[in-house]
Image (cartoon, rainbow, N blue to C red):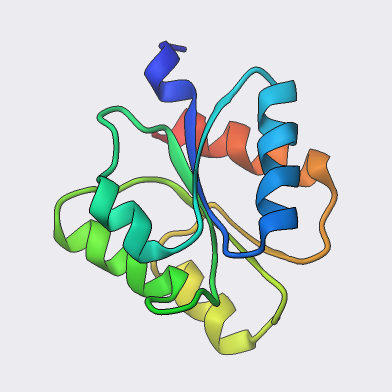
Length: 124
């Protein structure tokens, strides 16, 4: 797998969760790029060849679902994995409609996230 396709963009507003995901990804030999909001990612832009996006659904400002819609509208159709502390059937259904690789209610096991990321990177 090319190095740039091993880049996983993480959009999570909870500092502790963002750091935990970062440690997990680094430990698995992946390259995390971390953002604390959808707006921060949009401002920075996606690096070419990003393998997948892991994002919280409920973010301050734009939600994770809105972010994926905006990225798709701009032509970036990346495999995505949604994580959420609020398991809402409507959010789950919308994430499926948007083509999410996985929808993971918090707390989740690191191995479950890594398996979803492996699937996403294979789909990219």
